[in-house]
Every structure is written in structure tokens, then in C-alpha cells.
Length: 189
Ligand code: IMP
Ligand code: MG
Image (cartoon, rainbow, N blue to C red):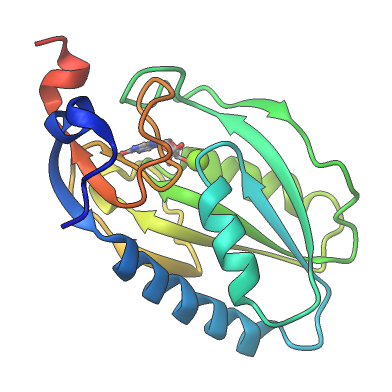
């Protein structure tokens, strides 16, 4: 298991590796092939959710062999904590108009589902041709809405995950794998 080169502190902070770099790459390639099948002939716009989905989007975009556009939004319900506050805030809106485009929102992880339910409604109100969601991870144990993503990379158990773009208090985003963060790290030992 590759945890080397990331320093002692990180190794100590991760309780368990859920998905290795290789497993993620394999799943991303499969998702890209599926999306290619489904979106041929359409006007695809990938909308990445900052910052958590930045690595997933960059790998997935290269795995989709179709013409497409890329844009980003930043929608937050979290702050620096590990539980959702419930209040959604748009910190950065789209640069381009999504009108008449087939929008695929690229998300890192769906927990309560509040962020995506809000974002999908917001996009559908802008005369888009279609709006769907591709999430790398789904954590169904946290769901408080009826939101269901069209594409899911992996389903994860309850617990706070970091790595491959996902953070706790802005740390761990650059880990090449996805792991469960030790509870002591965010519960203050
Ligand atoms: P939701 O609105 O509760 O579904 O929250 C979704 C957002 O919260 C995700 O896009 C992440 O940015 C963040 N989030 C939820 N669970 C985790 C986690 O386990 N690790 C890191 N970020 C998380
Ligand atoms: Mg996110």
C-alpha cells in the first residue's frame, strides 16, 4: 500500500485506506467510458464542484472521449467541520451560461445530499437541456434528502474520508488514495 512520501503525520492520521490510486484510476476510466456512451451527440458541460472535485474532474475529463466544456462552481454547506450545517452558500457561480447544454455535475462526495439537491435545482432553472450528477463517492448513511446521483464511483461507509481532492480543514487533498480520517484528528484527541 503506497503511503510513502507523504510524511509521518499523514500516515498517522489515516485510519484505513478505502481505495488505492490504482483502484480509483480503474473506476474513473469505467465512468468515463459509460459517460461517453450516454452523451455522444450531446452538448456536454462538466461542472466541477470546487474544491473537492478538482482531481476527479481532471482525471474524468480525460477519460471521456467526446467534445466537452468545463466550468466550476463552489457551493458550500460545510466550513471546516465534518458535519453539514444545512445552510448552502454559492461562493463561485458558473463563468459560462449553461443554457441548452447537457450539464453533468462532477462531485467528490454526496453525504446529506443537500448541496447537490440545491445545485441541481439551481441549474435546472437556467434552461439547461439536462442536468445529471456524477459523484466519485456516495455516503448513503448521511442522506437527509431523496437525492440520487446518476453515476457513482464508489459507495463508502459512515466516517470522514479524505484524499484525492477531499479535505479536512484544507489538508489531505493531495493524497493519491482515499482513506478514512482518524476521528481523533477532528475530535481534538
Ligand atoms: P452534503 O451537502 O451533505 O451532501 O455534502 C456534500 C459536501 O460535503 C461534499 O461535496 C464534500 O465537499 C463535503 N463532505 C461530505 N462528506 C465528506 C467527507 O467524508 N470528507 C470530505 N468532505 C466531505
Ligand atoms: Mg464537494
